[in-house]
Image (cartoon, rainbow, N blue to C red; front, top):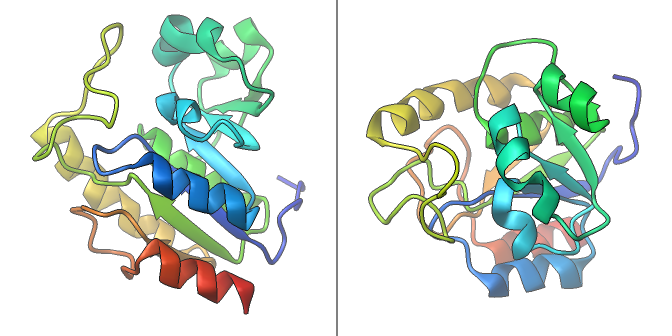
Length: 186
């Protein structure tokens, strides 16, 4: 991909983990960071530049509900063709929209990626918005699978900082959102 729109920037990726809070999204918006909202998190991050949902089933179930002007991206070639949205559907077969959103931020040139709502666990529930009613929800097995896959991103060149309040991801350094936002201003 040759689109380097966020070269050298700090980018926020906001996923749907149960730890995500609206006030965190407001802090990201106030900081004016380029932002990727994952799946239904566009509802809290209505300012997002990009909405990323990796699978066609999510787009089929929820795509018509989106009422923000964010650019739409997917890993699914079928969803991209059917809906006329952007696709980064080449490469590894990681089936996690959060992973793919981070990968997209890095491909756009991000120097640092801040993660919010990347719980990668169902100990506190499945999502900040409750269970999906129209598509699959994560379970312990899938979360463990995803946690193992995220380590691959640590080798892609950008600094990834997990600012999620609760998380099972151990492959990225942890930091509070407030601390990470101070770093992005330096």
